[in-house]
Amino acid sequence: MLFSAFFIENIIFTRALGTSWMFYLIKRPKDILNYTVALMAVTTLSGLIGYPLRRLVYNSELRHVLLPLIYIAVMAVVYIGVFFFTKKIFPEKFEEFGINLGVAVFNCATLGGLLVSANERLDLLSTVGYGIGMSLGFGLAAVIMGYGLKRLEYCKVPKVFKGVPIALIYLGLLSLAFYGLVGHQLPT
Image (cartoon, rainbow, N blue to C red; front, side, top):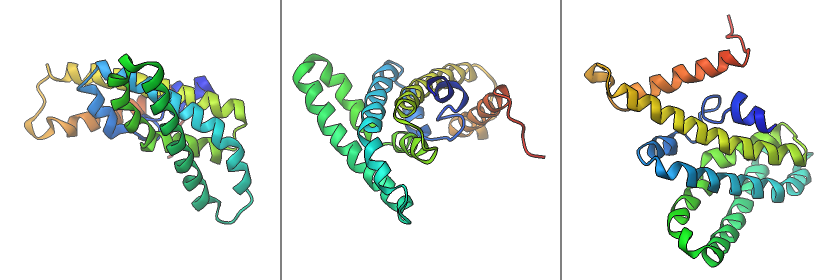
């Protein structure tokens, strides 16, 4: 699951979850690693805590309503725990790590990754592997996008496409490349 979430089902390239924050991180490359670590801690811990709780609502008709609420509550508890743990144990790193922690917790990539693992009914080990792989995949996507957008600055891009439009076109082309690379076929 770790490899699958990292490369094949990359959260950015296949589901477009977390792209808005990724575009922010590209402008601050030194924060990509901190954010990836924060995202990994939150998704792994939330997956571990949320796994037994999600099993309580599997057979409920309100599963699609209750599951996101359960994971949001779990993510809030994990945020509080990681916040105080980091502040107490690593006070010198807290300043740079703490900024990314809140965004890593309350982010559609985190909630989306947890919901994907729940909807796919992954076991505990696969849920943890998916969380770690999803986080590393997010970091990989941010590095690839940052590098590509830097290279696009040297190209003659029409004025209409400068900025966000060319970034979205580039993201779409990368998504199609990853989609084709893993062996999927486009519908005819």
